[in-house]
Amino acid sequence: MSRADTQEDLNAVIRQHSELLAAQLHSQRESLFPPDATKSMRKFTSGEAAALLGVNDSYLRKLHLDGKGPSPEVSSGNRRHYSAEDVQNLRVLLEKTARKPGDYLPGRRAGDHLQIIGVMNFKGGSGKTTSAAHLAQRLALTGYRVLAIDLDPQASLTALHGVQPEFDLLDGGTLYDAIRYEGPVPISSVIRKTYIPNLDLIPGNLELMEFEHETPRALAPGNAGLFFFRVKEALAQVDAQYDVVVIDCPPQLGFLTMSALSAATGVLVTIHPEMLDVMSMSQFLRMTADLMDVIADSGADMSHDWMRYLLTRYEPTDAPQNRIVAFLRTMYGDKVLNAPMLKSTAISDAGLTKQTLYEVERSAFTRTTYDRAIESLNAVNDEIARLIQKTWGR
View 1 (cartoon, rainbow, N blue to C red):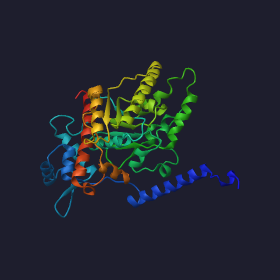
View 2: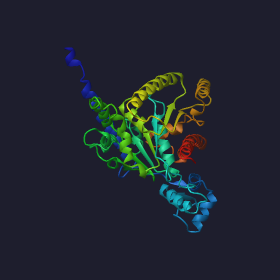
View 3: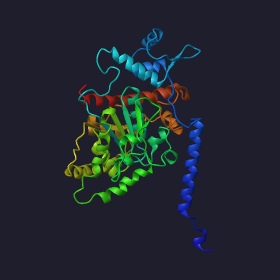
View 4: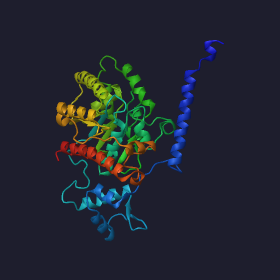
């Protein structure tokens, strides 16, 4: 028997495995989110709703008793639960009688520019997508109008929001459609509403790689600056509709990442405080700086409102990690966010069902595990929200 007779057709095996996995993921989604295989946001307790709004629970109870605002769902134990839509409607109601503008609707005012946050790192496992997803959802739940863009062909951010690329994006529907060189569509045509008020999504899939393949051909003499304006020009079409755009960048320094970086007003670099990750980040920063110089020489404005490092999957009891964290804080000072994202089984377990920690019920975990994780996430995301507010002069 010849080697050719016994050798597997690798292409056939990979394709078969790909189709099998996609079918299983689709089946899992339908079992988790029947009957129409779409996700919905859980209800919030009155305490959670009050915290999101920045008021006391007793004040919410008074509004309910006075018949003001949406009526919460009241359980048999007389416990009130509010939907995400209820929280948003209450936010609009409270803003009308607020002591100062923005107490409950913290988004842009006249003269404020759109905040575009690029979340990036080119090493896998740095928590990039987890950080982007929780940031986008937290900002939306606290009153910002948010557009989340999945620019990573692996499309993990997309899957987290209930869209399965293999089944739901057969005819396009990614940012590639709006930034391609031939026949781009309006960006509004690829924006999807999500199950969270204030949060829209542009999903991703492998089609995004077409931009990486087409750009070298488009970089003819005299068109050196063509590629890095694509994302910025597309977002300009919907500038007035959002307060913040969160872009989950690919884990590589390709044309997609550089175009996103050219559009960004803020840059968030995720760092897992392990030596190999820090060494990798050193190369990432060097390559990024070199590429930004080339793009700036081609006429792009590469200035940003802010750039911060976010420590992810941090374990406070891990002595080597603490040494690296101290090293980074000494070296970069306030460029490192004060709040780290702690490593938590709650976050990883939520991901098993394609959910963020903001979506799962607290009862799914022990109280201390959930509270520790959610407090960490909120501290990180609220620190970034303060950066946004400072950029707007508030």
